[in-house]
Amino acid sequence: MRTTSTFSILFWVYSTRADRNNESPIYARISLNGKRAGLSLKQKINLDLWDATRQRAKGNNMTARQINNYLSDVRADLVQCKRDLEREGRILSAELIKLRYLGEDKKVHSLLDIFEFHNKKMKSKLAPKTLCHYRTSQKYILAFVQSEFGKPDRFLKQLNHKFVISFEHFLREYSPEHYQGKIGNNAVMKHIQRLRKMVTLAYDMEWIDRDPFVRFKPHMEREEREFLTEKELKDIIDLEIHIERLALVRDVFVFSCYTGISYADIAQMDNQSVVFNDDGSKWLTGKRNKTGVQFKIPLLPLAESIIQKYAYHPRTQFSKKLVPIISNQKLNSYLKEIADQCSISKNLTFHMARHTFATTVTLTNGVPIETVSKLLGHRSLKTTQIYAKIIEKKVQEDMDILKKKLGNKK
Image 1 (cartoon, one colour):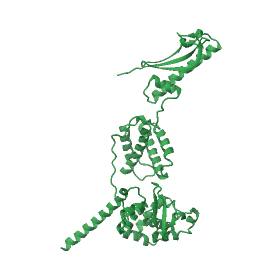
Image 2 (cartoon, helix red, strand yellow):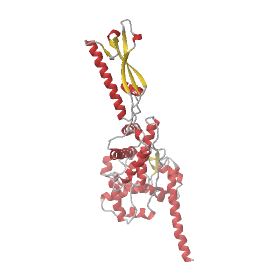
Image 3 (tube, helix red, strand yellow):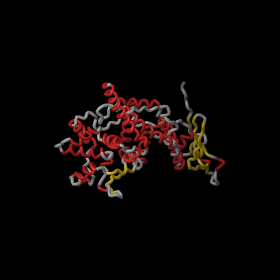
Image 4 (cartoon, one colour):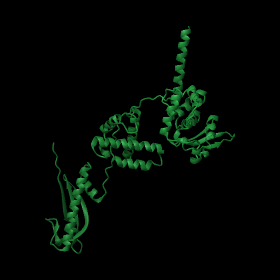
């Protein structure tokens, strides 16, 4: 069914509002589909000089030419306002055209608008690494918009359930330059989760009038958190290394295994991070880069020996940090070399050190889960309970082996 719209602009004067000089204000009337909006043009004209039929000033003198040129400009501007609103996909009305002309209409916000607003307002609230994750997600969203719609941006009002589903499909097929392959399921869900948070922010600010995620259900696959066994950790500690870069990486990794501190937090620690308790024992203190939660950890002998080992290392002398710091990318690459030398088949990454601290170093040795949660700087005990489940699973596996051995003997 084809629809048509009626649009017109009328200039007129209020003859009943003429002043003592017989001058009256000029008005514009915008009409669209039977609806009208009046607009004062802040101009006056002598009623004797106004041609109501032509909606123009009479004559060709300078005053008449100025008024008529002004009316022509107003007409052109109102027509342009209508065209701009149509291009933006707005629901047109005479009142909206008037507001656009006056610069008072509500802006149609886009993805780039919410990205800019989010990054600016959340800069002081989010950790730099978290904000970096958001920027990566934003880059993927814009890559999808360019691929799907052939445009560099998209209005928020155009987002719907189909957009979300299509973006999910795009991510599953997308191979970023810094990836070795395609993005995994949980990483895909994380990017969609960040988009959802930004869109929810736009919804709360009334930039959009509906939530495109209402019917979307994220699906996270349960991941087993790998950690080193006591033997594997001992093999890494006892490994004879003659290459300085590998020895350095091994030591920083072991330091994390015995403190539970993430690499991002270790990179921020300096001599001021070591404090003395009332009994004279040494503790490590700081604030988690990811969550901002304060932590305080007793300094175990092996971790302290690593700090002492690198106290006068050129890198720590220059950076004033507790231990030498290298890029996280190189660190994980070097850890794989160490894993090969120790015949460890697990995908050894630096974050595994934190898991090892939670399981092999603390929980397995009887440290209460509430204490472990505090040491790890977790906001909620639920976050720590995943490690307790890992320990339970390991106990069950060991008991199954024992049952088989006992069964064979019987």
